[in-house]
Length: 250
Image (cartoon, rainbow, N blue to C red; front, side, top):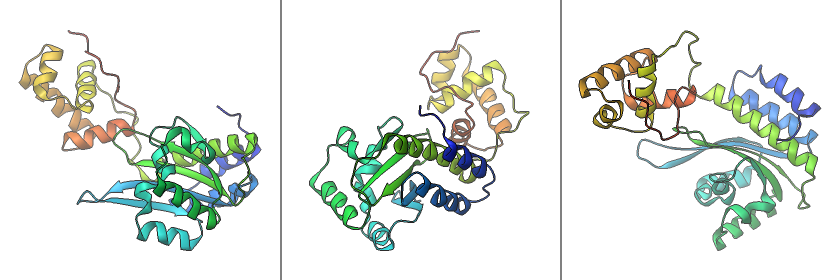
């Protein structure tokens, strides 16, 4: 991990006071030039009720480019967003070929972005279970390689921006007094893993009805009515283990 510098330290302090995603966007726009970048984009991709993907973005990209991306749904094939699915940590756009086998369409998209002024950039992606994938990108009008200190600064700014964006637009804060028994924790882990009540009963060595009692207690403590919402909150609050494992009996 890159070492925090004065730019990142100042951003972190100010970001703690952000109350809306628009506040955060303004703060990123102020910090980006200090790190040598002109543009930024804080984006996430979600699906609507019909299952159709939608791009949500706060950015200062050239308006003509943003309108084109949305109108033509270019984000569905965006190589930067695609690379964010597998990359660990941040990555410069010059490394896209290491993460994505670029198609002719994607190469054309990068060329079009370059003509719009987005010639190079650094992207940080967040992949959190049960949450829309999100990215924070800082971009520059220069095609030259990004200096190491600028890339390190971009990565730390992106990580902090994504953390704050998650706080502002995600789940409510976890109650401090929330507590689960050992058995409730086991049921919650298996629930998040998508196990049925019958499978849970076999793994835990208890009856199907007993599993339902523990599951009901878990849902009640989380304040939700269904397993899907429970899984989302458990992921957001860091309550569940995602390692596939068989809980101890007893």
